[in-house]
Image (cartoon, rainbow, N blue to C red; front, side, top):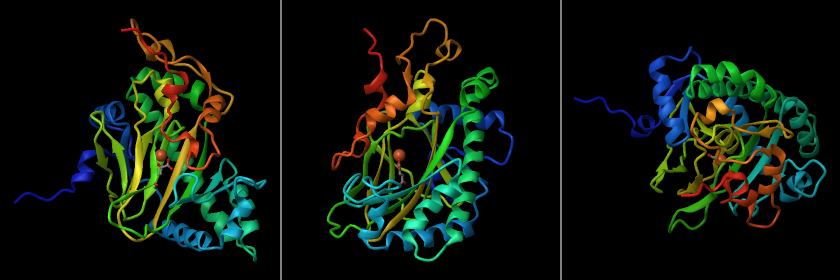
Length: 321
Ligand SMILES: O=C(O)CCC(=O)C(=O)O
Ligand SMILES: [Fe+2]
């Protein structure tokens, strides 16, 4: 008898992030980063207990009345809350920014919670700092897929000022289930790498090179990692930032945590010669990180971060055929 192995876990390589990377996993990872830009990590150091705590505090937070939450909305001074109908009718989120995760969480908590709630900011500090360490490791390993020398030569000089922020996301339950609905429309991430925890519902999908949607089903004990636009541009498209989305299929809430690891705002993104490779041409004009973020920003209803636009639209060089 064949041992049943979950198909979804099979599709994406799973990297044990607690161990030094083996040459064999590096080659499957290299393939994954080039083709789909998605893989999974295990032994990441986030305990079930920590998830459960974040989840229950989040449930409480998102259950607060809209009048409360909007005090942190796009027109407030804090701007950590994204209300419904910006990304989609079902999507709302709270952002917690590093490196001072505790301060960021606290400034939201001060507005939302009547009584002082130190646990909220403490657990988000723990999550944020663990994600920060994981992001650094992941970037190093992803650079190693471009060659040992790339990691050695460019990690410190190019990536040491990266910073991260967390988005706690609540997808509300769709009422009509005649067909699946988009909880978050097709987009690429404006990060170097993104680390996602999704709950047991599933619904995350990535678009393949052939244009098919592939389900990234939840796999216990693993986190999903994807390459973002900043690394796609920096690597001259040797690493892929894939379009992905979230579909909702069941009449229940969906909870996820997305951590974005990004270049500093003022960084000029330009693929190094060694990464471009001799005889190849650059496929992106150099650009300032923040200018791309601003290009994607939009507070128009239904146009969350210009869903559908990518770094190619902003800085891509169309090669003459
Ligand atoms: O909710 C998820 O599973 C993914 C969210 C996502 O892709 C994003 O926030 O960029
Ligand atoms: Fe995303």
